Image (tube, rainbow over all chains, first blue to last red; front, side, top):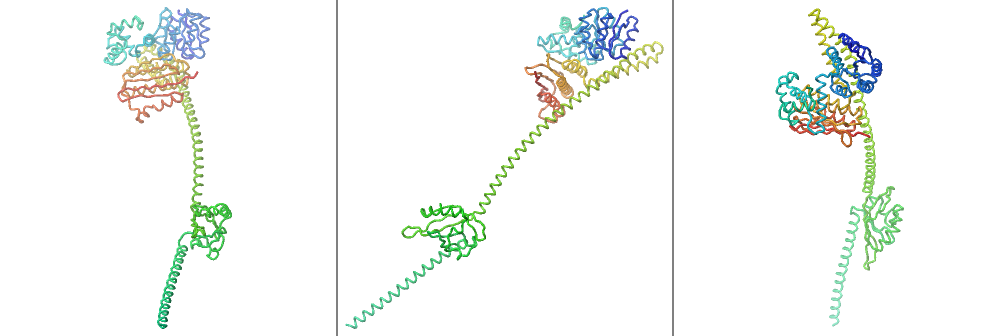
Length: 212
Length: 405
């Protein structure tokens, strides 16, 4: 059984999440907290295998909890829970040292596998979160180089192309036309000074914009 | 002989007599002519319609014109033989005796002397007097001939004019003071209005944030909890009863739609990311949201900027939001670049697109695109907003704000 600490200030959501976790019969919620301070206390006392922490709580927020846990109990991996869809929160959480990120909206489907994944030492990131992180990464490196920045959609297309997706597949994924995909592709090539898809794959892998 | 002598004498007597008669006739004629000329002169003197008078060397009046008498209200008998200065005010009398008479009798001429006469009815008459001295064969001045011009009306008009001028200058001074005062009042009320706008915007934002928070924290969380159960119900029912499972699935989808609606509403009211993570993250999130919905390439560049307070970040966020919305809606741009960077004095937010642009001089476009609102927001935080745009050359909106400290 994986021992989990569950921290969320909304009791009805916490209750629902607890049910989701325990239904799996592989996870046991050994402690609950309604704010950051309590979460930190209980984490140190109860030593859970995984801490599932809501990003916005009164008092200490989730990101601060991650930060403190990193220094006091670095061995407990943290999975961040959030109501927010914006990738900016993911980036903050990952930068602070969280190992994964699940929105409450998708918790019934993803929470159990996310806990299991980070318990086994992996990271749990959604596609969107990975893209946002990759965008930060490429902007950081390109800002220093003074080159042109990519937009989110350009980066998405680039990542897909780097992983070998066809224009048609990309069009379907993002619900845009094949022609638009091609426009994005040529913009990316131009902005990065690349010639073709092979160059593009190499660039993406070298800059860790995709996980292979 | 004697007879001859007698005849001669009588002829001589006769001749002398005739000569005598002739002489008398001539003298009579001359006398008559002199008298006539004298009368003509007097007539002209009396009847000329100006105020004429003559005095002798002692100041006695020896002749005045009818017009003089008319104006002064006297009969000739009451005037001839009187001292001229009897008809003067005491001041004028003093002036005449002390200054004008000595001067006149010396030079025989004076011009534009200001006197005041007193009429018979007691009224005063302002006079401008000019005169010359009439001389005898030896060149001695024996009397004067003086013309007096009534300048009472003229003087009064002049005085009135002066008073009017003074009044006018007083009015203009007062007016100026009033303008100053009103300007100060206007300035104060403009400041007041500015403060009020600021307060209104601040309280609007506060309310929006409150509603957004309420939606997000309360409704959002309840819906999330509902969805967790709905997923469970759906999974459980699907195993037992296909139709019931389908109903549960629809219920879950409805809940999901509602969650998305609530999230969009809250985001539009005030994005939580602005309060939680700050301006840069909020703008970045805004741009990826816009890009997802529009397929226009939206690039956000930024460098760390410090010292942005809540009011400033809200203002800049709203300006950015408005500018990007405009670019997406009206410009047909394929690329929008937003940049948030520090400069030596503060912070610069630039929104640039490659769209169709517009004529910045056309006020209807300026108002229609909410540019005035953006400018106002900028000025309320002490910033300046510049819009440069040309038809078919894209638009660039640049907002610079100084940061204190």
